[in-house]
Image 1 (tube, rainbow, N blue to C red):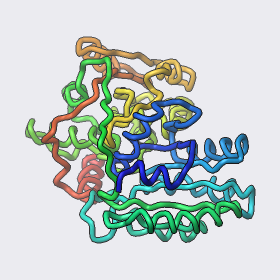
Image 2 (cartoon, rainbow, N blue to C red):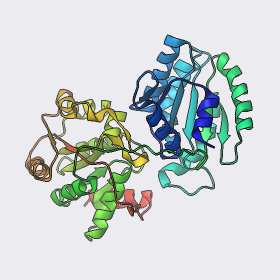
Image 3 (cartoon, rainbow, N blue to C red):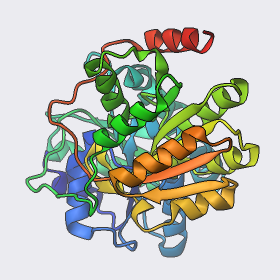
Image 4 (spheres, rainbow, N blue to C red):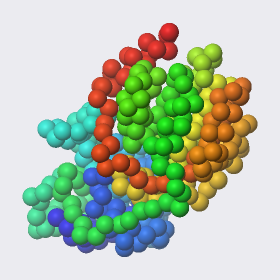
Length: 372
């Protein structure tokens, strides 16, 4: 189905969301139609943020908003859906559009398997009526379901369209670019060269995939790395937990701008605890690149100033290889919490692979390495 048809049938004038590759057609259409005009479209930090924005829109206009997300974001909306939107509380109607990653019977990555199994059940548990949209879903069927949904929305209830793989299409294709030149994979190579045998925690998405392939090409063991293949926004907290309990080891966190924004409160916790052995590297390309390239707000905020305000005594920003090498070496030698923001280009190799070890194998080898 053309995504424009779905949007027309829904009839909403406001969308808030966190990008998803399964919703690429919707994301590109929204960028082409609205860009980042906050009256019609806001790319939010996390899905709970989206739900609250949607609530504010409804309170101000009386109209029904749309929140779009990958199904991994259901966990982030449980609290606002149950304690803010629900018809037993404020009865704020919201239409959710959810990309169904890890749908049972459809091959997907390990972090999506269990989430895919419980996607519909979580909606049922939250009292959110849903309709699954697939490649064979027709316009008449969708209009009929939307008619039923309007009655529920009128009662202050929430509804959801769950989108199967390949269900939506869009003839256009938004193009995303960054003003910076350094590729993320090259940045990670520099980090690997400096970190040596130190433990590394990497964020979800292409960063972890690139780290895995760099180790493989250089003949290095994967035991040094914990690849956070899911749990977007939590790699820095994982690294903090390791650093506190392994004070004699330098611990590196390779993070992304979208991940940092998703749970920015983690930076305040890290800065307050201030482990002397943690190096937090944020690769900032100003985009949710792994799921298509839609922009984040990280291009227009000062992450190093935020880090300093959170308690990081050492916080710098670099945009070239020489500056990166200098700051990595200083952080390696320094006794003190370090934050390095690296400005990055958008893009990755077309032939970029995925880790060939399972998540459990990764955990086991990493834990064994930490005990050495």
